View 1 (cartoon, one colour):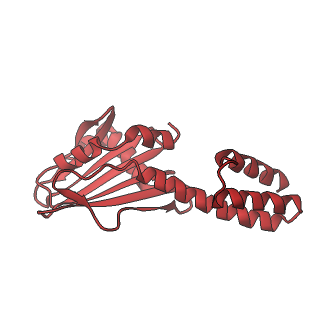
View 2 (view 1 turned 30 degrees about the horizontal axis):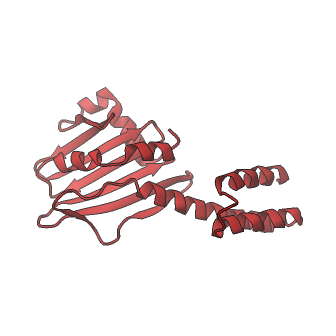
Amino acid sequence: MRNALIAALSILCLAVSPARADEIGDQIDAAKKLYEEGDLAGAVSELEFVMQALKAKFGEAFLATFPAPLEGWEVEENGGKAGSVPFLGGTNVSRSYRQVNGPGRIEAQLSTGGGMLQGLAQMFANPQMLAMQPNAKRVRIQRETATTTFDPKTKEGQLVLDLGGKATIMLQGSGLAGPEPLVELAQRWDLKQARALAGL
């Protein structure tokens, strides 16, 4: 237990610069003080708060990689949501876009830590599975390969992009004339920064 706490405190101290006096740094200092005093339960409690705060900052950093709206579109009022993926230790971030003078809606998500989105991305990457989807197409997004599907009857489509098995981007659209807005929005994503945050 003590060895685990030492390791956790060492990693967290490296993650947060001592020169930057903020809430996370203060909580790490408090956890270290409690540990040195022999209060292991108190140190663990402080570290749990630190991890929650770090995950929130991680989510905010991923949210900053999301693209600006397309011309004629806007970000919906919520501005974006960030949270953790239960039981997986990952991050899930989303933002909603809407067409200003039209019925179009796009829900953009970025997920790390495994889960449904990454399973779906791997499924679409399988050529045999891709062949079973009549409306599925592979498209290039910057230097990445993504898969789009679109149903002209329902005017609904999606784009799935896997980032090295560590992060998955999904765009789900409705009220669209085709998959083009999904592709164009994905092209505007800061994929370089998203990959860096995912550890790629």
